[in-house]
Image (tube, rainbow over all chains, first blue to last red):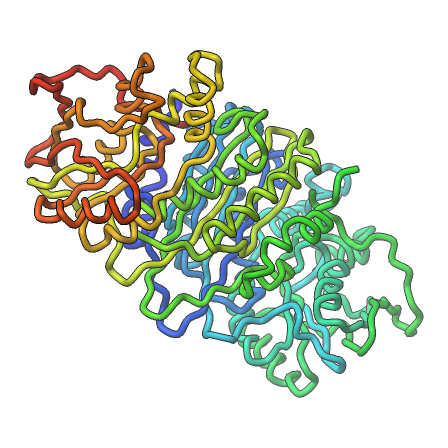
Length: 320
Length: 320
């Protein structure tokens, strides 16, 4: 028998709010949040629909973590530290109590991982597919936010981690790509469980000029920086960081350029910051790779190892 | 032809964020919000599904306003003043651009009405019904929040406005109740366009001990106060405030006791506050009616005009 709304809140959601005094045990109309002194708050909201943004057979705990992490990645891209989150759970007729229990267990694990708690939200029913919406709240010192609009001519373009893994992982899950068991585990893990680069984002507040997380794809997301900053860029395709699992797969370069869902940080910084960024890479044990340059004007060109321009057919996908 | 996500954001949503500097023209990963000095933030999130929480034929502008207002009502119940909101719009295959244009026009009108702006959000697609999730952010002085848990023995129980109108209005819309044209306009208006009692909530911060908004129904919502406060109550059925349109309709008293969606404020306050509350009623031009008393112990009894207990069969509905 399905738990009713109140029982579900009491048994599954209330424990997730136990460490968050302002959640008021989810018993009140809204949650309270006392902003740290001198803080500016950062707010982001992402929605996910079963069958559209995740696969119905994905482990429920991974769905929970991905939902939370894509929002934390938005906080990371602005240099914010997470404070808490609200959840709207729109349950379908097929959503079982066991699915919800595993989903909440995933949230509990990631709450511990990222030291945040559930503040509040809503649970309702739909005749359509399970739909999830999460609002994450973060904080940073006033005026310290990293924006997309800060890139300046002469900046280096950097990216964290490796690119294209998530898009290749999705192809593996969809049966379109055959790989070794180890590569399968790595690539599908990158698709299912992105790693929000929170420590990196916060460390970059005083170094980077502009930042974004790679969710739509490198070309599309760099395009967002260029458009809002009013600048152009050149990318060196040979410099794109590819994982050992991705490197020799067909379509790896295209996935790195246009595949979404890697949730790495793409940022620009002046050349004077190179030594500091390289030190940060060692400190965080996270590759940070220079992949291009910002210049005055407009437009994005991708160059091969000889400096000749590559035509790119796909500039990333667009949800909607 | 349907607008793509980016065009929809540019043409419809960006204007809604124009007056909100922290929304960064919806061009960034997240929104910024500088909390007013000394403020505590109040956060609430409600979701609505087409066919479940609103009728597909409802005017889109009214749907937008109801979505915003039910969230503002949660802020009102805690005594908070609204600061802004985030929106997740999960568009169905049937959602037309014209529907979205009217929806956004409704948001624009209510933004002006309540002096708030759009901070950010997400737009995605679903094969299911149109689904909306809104997160509202408000503020109040630190420690000043009205909670459900503050009711004390000896408190009066008060309610604002009139009760049962929205439930009767829904019956009218569903063809279950035949009324005059004037009553139809009034009752359906109460169902479609609740009025968040923001000024009242803020004025009650120093007067009331506990508050909640009437969304599930008077009995259910008073039950929430009793449960979290660890007290009991008696309600005087004859004292329930009914509108002129509702007063003589069949089921009016039941709608007032158990009908949801009125979004009036239900609050408890010590008898010493009566004169101040009555003055507030005149000042706000809003009926505030004493309908019962809080006592030690537990349980909720409803009494008729002779003081005899009435058995109530329905304690309000439960979404999920």
